Image (tube, rainbow, N blue to C red; front, side, top):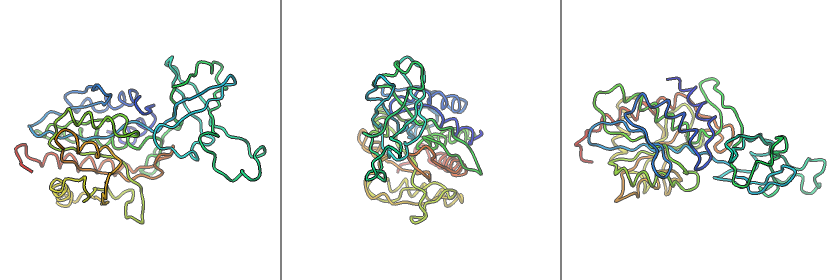
Length: 337
């Protein structure tokens, strides 16, 4: 599997919060050869099932991206918008955007602001708020077909360079690539647990999809994956493997010990970060689903989170998949934790 190509394709797919069907198509094409079944549940999660023994493991990665929704458009083709998920307005200035309209067509726009020549001297150094930004969609001859509720994302083409990939929405589609590669690794084994790869919807607005799937699947173990900040001061860096969340109230202590020991015994690079409370990931809702699910959290180091130029390292994606596949196989179906 060409992981660089997969990461680029996942990044480029259009998938605002709650509208991830285009991303699902990319995932299904890549994962179908390695699983027994794929389906979309009632809330909008894509679930791929690798059938195995009685132990049931769920791997949760969200595929929605921070995005924009049109809130008003005037007769000139200038549209106001609101954010879906956490976006800093500074990263939107002068960006090209792609708008998906209700008629199914895509239309272009650019996010403009008042030119510096026209700004007041006392406000020239201020960062504009969302109330001061707009999408100029007037470049479309049929901009009147853009309406309130239409969705937009920054239009940026991902690329690979020097073992890294940069693009939008790698939070958390880079971890979706890990799930796909894990399924491929598991296909090498004759006996595996039953693994549900859950590509979740609406994580960026409260991990809504993960809660519904975890309730329905009645899992023995939930593994959530998301990105974390590349930060040398906290010893989390690209190229040094996934960060395992250790300690805190959300992480199952025995499963963490088993995973950590597996990584050490097999000389797989990992890093560590402490979970002092809510993680802000799918893990928060997975662990409280039903009567409670033992939960782990693995985080992929990333630079420039929630911007159009997020950066991940391909070797971290491959290494995390090898870790998960081997760890899952090491868990015996009748083992009591």
